[in-house]
Image 1 (cartoon, helix red, strand yellow):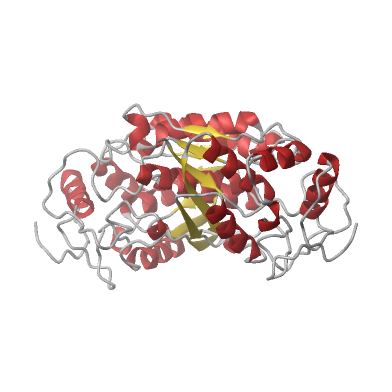
Image 2 (image 1 turned 180 degrees about the horizontal axis):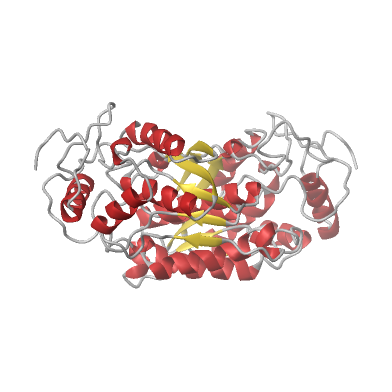
Length: 226
Length: 226
């Protein structure tokens, strides 16, 4: 059975990715990062999702990105925008986050002798994010295949980003088709400890619009209505 | 003045890299990683070196690589070899370490709007390490230049590995020429809290042999003599 490390944030996208990886027959080792984000609710969600979707194991690695700041998610003195305005890359962008997370996944993959990494990067809703583009992911895979013992010994590591060209509505439908219970997931940038979503941040707006476009009931508890 | 993030472990190589970056006119932001290594003496050494060589600032980011293990440096139930035997990649190799450290440096570079990263990777003494080879570093730079806002906006980031083809003796001489006080540095994998070196692990053996080959007095306090 092929092994994969699956980056799992606890949100809608990465839950779908885990379900797709399981359906494709991978033994899945789910990895979450406690990186100094604004709330712990998404890590609790990641654990629920890993259990529900049959991950072989789930680990949370601690990395304090508050050391660098530069994002409203890691510098808690900055406010998360809730006005829906979109001009360029938002303040919630975390510098080099996918590069760091993929590198942590790569390290664990090397220890596990895994065949693949899975990441929920998406170039549609996050079109301004450099590290969500297919060309970035291809360059990352090329680098990864020079970086490890296994790669040098001829074992190729494949980076799968199955959502990269999907709309949020397509992701919702793909997730439901693959058995995801989205009531377990948390997307909100500033969820409360119970996992209730603010309903106003960009993550909530994109999520809500995705369910609406997919014509699927949204199980999320939003504190503020649309 | 060009800005650089310099990965600084507190050892001989990275101290030399910082001195070379300073001599080349970079404003240097030194980064160390508290990754669950066996001792804190190298982080104390990194601070001394950053101060002595005029780094603009020095930060230590916490990342718990004990979550993955897979190396005698991060799994403290494994012994550090002290018998000098060398067969392939040693148990002290930390999976994907340079990839992770470069990714952390990249994140900070993005926050600082820096022009360059410096790393003490060396393909001679660590010839079995995949992530110390020039082709790996080239692939990393290609990926990094697709990964960040600055890169996408046309600002190239350069990864400098000035030691990559040097012998340890050449590094010792280059460091002295650039003003490094090697008595401040700690290379040993299992130094004690005062920074004294064991004298028997591979890092001590390589360091001692480097000073000997360079015909330079070695200021290191070794607990075990050659």
